[in-house]
Every structure is written in structure tokens, then in C-alpha cells.
Length: 190
Image: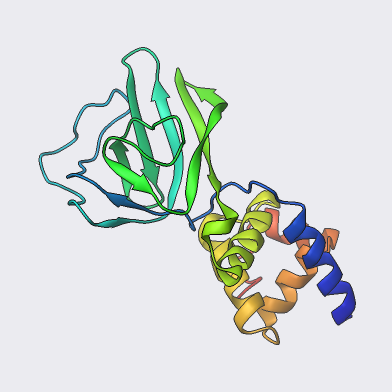
């Protein structure tokens, strides 16, 4: 059983070359950051981040071609004006530390171009990558972001727990477990 799980995880980890970010990506603010809307308009005068602050859980880079506004968004935080440089890691308002903006547009919604944030694997620890890879896989299988974090944490840190067993079953491709996950079964990890 352990060998089968180890084999599956090895395939999972090595099949993701430029994984999209769940919550692993972070940057350092190089100036004051204020929340903006999709037109690039400042939502309020309060600074959300100051120069030197860690901006965590960066998940996407968006461009509004109509207004020219470009912004980076953080899970649970908001979106902030940000024009990215050609290297995908530096910009006018913050520097990405362990990830980069994917230059390809991943989708367009209501005229806004969405770009993925790709994890730079060499700039992350093995344990952080393992957590992020498992979270991303669970999200791909239908888990909400917070659910994926809880499940990955249980799977890694509490492998004998009920939640870890359920997570293992999902990761191994059990169709019943995947259906429970995609149906949002609240008792699956309680």
C-alpha cells in the first residue's frame, strides 16, 4: 500500500513542471499597495500593504486591455496595481519571490485577461512544493481552496487521520471519493 501511494505521489510531483499557484506564491511590496477594481481604480485610500510587506497567496495576474490596468491578486486579500516586467517576477509595485507571471493568457472573462502564476520550483522548499502540489491536485479534482489546504495538511501531517485516508482515496483516483469531494461532502474531513 505504501509503495503504491509513494509511486502515485512521485508521478504527481514530477508531472507538474510549472504548476499554477494555490497559495504558495508570495512577493515583497516595493511601494504602498491599495486595493483596485478591474478598471484599475483605487477602491479606498487605505494602504493595504506598505513597502517591505510580504504579500502572500498570490494567485493571478490580470490585465484590462480596455483601460490598460494591470493588477495582481492575492487569495483572500484583494487585487493591487502591478505592471509586470519581461522576466515575469518583477514589477512596478512588488517583486515576486518564488513564482512568476505566465505571459500566456489563460482565460478571458468580461474583457479581463487572466494570467496564471507559475511556481518557480527551484525557489521553494521540497515540503512547500509537496503541500502545494497536493493542494493543486485536489483543487483540480473539485476541492475548494480552503478544503484542499485542510486535506493536504491532514494527508501530510496526520497520515493516520480519517481526513488523510479520504484524501489518499481521492488522490489514488477512487471514483466514490472523488464524487464525494466534487459534491462538497462536508463530513469527508470532519
